[in-house]
Structures are given as C-alpha cells and as structure tokens.
Image (cartoon, rainbow, N blue to C red; front, side, top):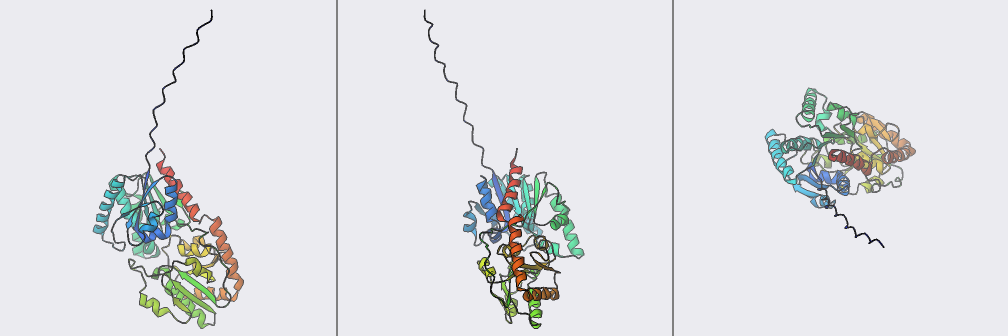
Length: 396
C-alpha cells in the first residue's frame, strides 16, 4: 500500500515590514548666507549625499538659490553679525532655539565665532546635545595680544568648554593654535583640525605664469585692516621706490558688517603707481592666472585663509605672514615666503626676492599646488573628515 503524500506545508508568515529609519536632520547655523555660499557649499552637498536632511539657518541676502542648489533648505534668521549687544544675541538665540525645535535637529553645526555663541546657546535651550563647533578663526580676539585680548580669550574658553559644551560636542578647528587658545588639546578625540573649508582643485586649476617683468602680485580678500591690505600697499611702494618691477592688484570689497572694513575712498586713494583696487570678483582663478604671486599679509585672527588656499590651488607662490593659519599652510621657502606681520619692510624685501628670481615663483607655485592635493586641503578631504564627525554623532 502506497503511503499518502505529505500534505503541503503552509509557507511561514512573512515578517512584518521594517519601517525605514527616519531621516536624520543636520542644521547649519551661520551668520551670513554669503559666507556659507563662498566656503561651505561642498560640505552641504556631501551631507546631503550621505542621506542627511540639511537646513541652513542664516541671514538671507543674495545667496539663497546657491545654497538651495545643494539640496539644503534655507531658513532665514535676521541677526546682525557686528552687534555685540548681549540682549540682541540672547534674543537671536531664543529665536534660533525655536527654529531648531521646529526642524527637529539631530545635529547643530555652528560656524564661526558668533555662530558658535548664538547657535550653541540655542542648541542648549532646545536640548540638542550633538553639536559641532566650527571655529573659522578668532578674529580680533585672536589677533590682539594685549590684556583685553587675553581676557576675551579666557572668557571665550570658559564659555565654549563650559556652559555651551555637552558630552556630544565636537570641535572643528582650522589650525592648532586656535585649539590651544580655547584650552583644547589638538590631539584630543573631540578636536578635529581640518584644512580650512577646503578648495576644489578642479575649479582652481594652474595656468601658465604671465611673462616677466613686472612681478604681478594679487591680493584677493575682504578689504579689512586685519588682512594687512595697507601693509601690502606700503611694501609695494617701498619696493617700487627702490626700482623693483612689481605691481599689486587688490580684489575684494569692504565688509559693511565688519568694524575693520577699509573705507572705499581709502581703497580708491591707494590706486595708482602700480597699485590698483578692482573691487570684488567671482573669477578668482582668472585673477591668479594673470599674476605670479598670491599675497595675504594678515595681522592675525585667521583660521586657514581661503585666499591662500585658492592661490595655492592655482599653482601660485604664496606671500604671507607668520600668524596662525597662514603659517600652517605656507612653509617658508617651500610654498612661498613668510614674513613677520605688520612689517612693510620685510614684505618689500620678499617682493624684491621674487622679482629678482623669476624661477622662484614658478617652483614655489608648483609646491603650493602639490601641498593642496596631498595635505588634506581639498574640499573633498575636508568634507570626508566632517562627515565622519556626523556619522560618529549619529551612531547609536
């Protein structure tokens, strides 16, 4: 007798669908939309590419479309960057806290000193412990070496490492001097040093040097006294008075929200006898293509100046000062020449050295480009480091 076949076995019940993980939310806090647009669009694109919902809270003027093109949302917050009024800052922090709660932020990334003070306060008020404090330079607080400067740095150190800090706060800095000024150890796991905002080497590609002479020097920066614009002007006047064939082109606009802005009438008055102020430009690579040397004789307070990153990426020799940030990119005698700050005489001698040796600028320009590519100063390298912080803060 043949055994009856086994009855068909019912398939096991399907497992319940796994709900997708909610999209995590990253909010950048930055005072001005132009600053985010000029420095951090690549970072925003990288954050969107890793699956984050990205918002940028800022004072909106002319750069909303550029920021939104990265996939980020722009949220306006009207707050005056130049104001030191604690009540105004407190009011802005209260507004921002409400915005952060409404956006349900998982990480708050505060950019620059005011962004850290207002954004850090708002994040604490909103109960958001995952914070990135990105210091892009100490400004006047870092440049001043008198008692007032030391007192300001002490107060800032206690704030950022005290009431504004949480166990999940990470510090993003552009040079180790700024870390130490805040009482932070650059080797600490909570501290990350990056190559400024980074630069796209494809967008700032080298071009052949212009013919000689004269030595053509470009200074592309905001027209601020702290950038040493007047030092460069005086140095070129000294050098030309000694027969050195050199010209200086100034590109940039005064920053109306910065108390250290150089008046336009002063900039116009400097033009003449080999010196010309051209106003702002968006064609930075084309400017460097027409010059031999990129100059930034800063008085200090820098993070890691974009002016030098862009000049280096364009394969131009760098001429700068021995202040934090500048000296972290430029090694004297390799990528360029480094002189003391606020020293027109030393700067004039450096100009004469470049003018006397046409091959010097070419060799240093090649070294500067190589340093950008290999030293962690590209936009991609910086984005990789920062996105690593986001992954760490979002880990269970």
